[in-house]
Each structure stands twice: as C-alpha cells, then as structure tokens.
Image 1 (cartoon, rainbow, N blue to C red):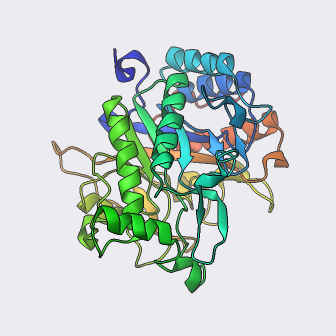
Image 2 (image 1 turned 60 degrees about the vertical axis):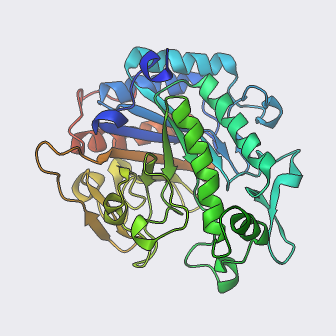
Image 3 (image 1 turned 135 degrees about the vertical axis):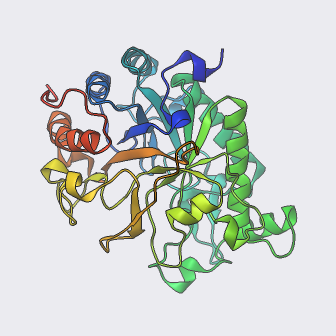
Length: 371
C-alpha cells in the first residue's frame, strides 16, 4: 500500500491545501504539544502540517541511520509515532522536509568533505556540494529516513537560499561563484550550462525519487527558473512549488510559474510568516507591517515584491478547469527559538490560525482556543 492511501491526505491532490509549516529544525517542540497542535488544526479545517525538520544549527528528529546528527533534545522514534498517530486520527497530512542543499551545516557534521567551496577557497559549511555523486546518495538517504518516520502523500525537498540573494554583492551573485557546480553542469549538459543547471539536476533527481515513492515533491520557489526564461534544465513541472518570495521585479512571479505549468502553494512571506526573531515576537492576530492577516491576505494573493506591500492576485480559474493554485500555508519560523516558551508560542500562534482558517473558508470551531 502506498503512503498516499495509508495516511491522511494533505489536500494537494484536490486544490484544498490548507497548511501550517512548523520550524522543528531551530526550536525543540515536545511531541505532546505537536499532538495538541494537530488537534487544533483539525478543528480549524487545516489539511496539512509541514514539518521543517532540519536547519543550519540543528536537526530536530533522530533520522534512522543518521541518529548521530540529531540534537540532544530531538524527537525519537516514539515521538514521531505519536505525531503520526495523532495526524492520522485527525485527518491531517504530514509533510516532512529535509532542507537541502542549503541550511545544511548540522547535516554535514562528520561529512565536511561534502561542504561547498567557492572560487576564493572559502568553505561554506551550510551548503552541500551537489556536484559530488555522494551528495545525492546522502540526500536520498535522508529523505528515505524522513519518509519512514513520517508517511504521507507529500514530501518537501527544501531548495531555498542556495545561491546569492539579490541584495548581496556582485561577488556573492557571480554565476561562477562555485566552480564545482559550473564544472558539473557543463560536464553533464554542455558548455553553456551554469550552476543553476547543476541545482536543477539535483532537485529533479530528488523529485524523481519522491514520485517513485508515490509522494508529491514540494520545493521552495527561490531558484526555480520559469520555462519562459529557457533554462537548459527546467525543474520538472510535477513538482509543487511552495511560493514564499519574490525578491525583485525581474525575478519570477507566481503567474510566471503558473504559465510554465507548475502547481503552486501560496506561502506568502510578507503576510503568512509568524517569526520568532531577534527583533521580537509576532503581534497577535496576524498583524504584520501591512495590517491584520484577515484583512490583508486572500488565498490567491501571492507576494508581488518583497516588503513593498505589493501583492499579486492570481485570477480564479473558469469552472471545470483544474486549479493549479492548490491552496495556502502559514509558516512558523524560529530564528530566535528562545524568544517564547512553547506554551506561550502556541497561544500566540492560535490568534493567527483562526483568521487564516477563516480567510481560507475552512474554520469549523471559531470559538475554541488552544487550551
């Protein structure tokens, strides 16, 4: 029996994805609290809990075969089993994520030879050198381990923040910054290939594995080049893009991805990000710089331009046409994990979950609270 038929559905197959992403990589959450969260998500009509299991400084679960990488307070197999049982009982699909090839420092402890080196000889301890054949074997092993602990109909492949961001200097954004990736791409594809093509080869290989396991592969949108831009190696279109960011006007929009044949989940980083940061904790009710979540967000409202209060509303599809906007997801990020204790964080988070559920048309029990 495939995982898709054995466990609760995330909603990806029916354009009804209503998700919450939880940063288990940075912050330790008790299994009991996550079980209670799953119950609350079910009350509010959510369909999926996306578990961001790994981060730069921490691995939040003891992955079978890679137990030595886990933090001391990471979940063990019994914790994972409790969470899986609760999700199945509540009808919540679990979407585990191993975040590669960036944010990988904790995963690369003991595998320092797989760290990426730039053209100046600087070792990037948080980046996996995807030009090495061993890197793909390692990544597939991690995904297999996460899949064994958290069965479901989808799996998240990560893929964010590997290359230089638009605000970084020219050296950080130089296409020749990582010679190993350029050489790998040109060896595999041809003389015009770039490091972006090396990235696409790697992510496509992970996606192919996921599809063989009957799991829908998801991927952050950062480095996905739309078909209109003519990449030598396109990211395959049976990957669901988790669209959280649009950095600049010349970077792809949600519509560019839709026009290229991708299905999307809307994880709008300006409107749906609940962040514990060094600057403080989130305000209640989804209030960010652009107002309350309930008044600022709409299910098809993607980021138009980061931090600019510019949004892109994707039109509804005609009746009878399959909708390639599959839904939306909130994200809990714990950049400063100790900014709030667990119980306090979930109390505050509930003031975001309720308006999100209402906007998504999913709320079932609006008067209940976290307790």
